[in-house]
Length: 108
Image (cartoon, rainbow, N blue to C red):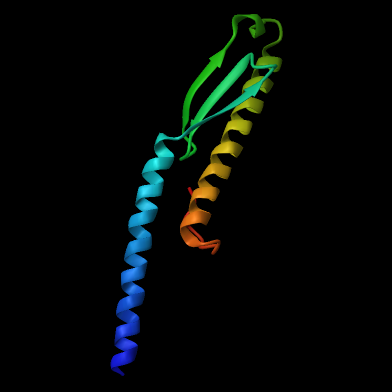
């Protein structure tokens, strides 16, 4: 019986350590910024590791009032690329932390 209590205490301690590491990783991801581009770099979207848009830059040459649809498509493509990179970065960090275990709810 005492062995089971010791095992349970070790398990809880390990869970607390993982939680602390996860908090550290989340803070690091907040600081990591990735960029997605479209239109040969004419549209750039930067996203942090928590999948928050940090900035959007659009070169003047790509702004055509007669073709708003193209600009919308470029912004969407750049944002999608940046978000994909941010998700990959988050997954990579969480995988390092968990040793490859897929724990639901850890990724933003």
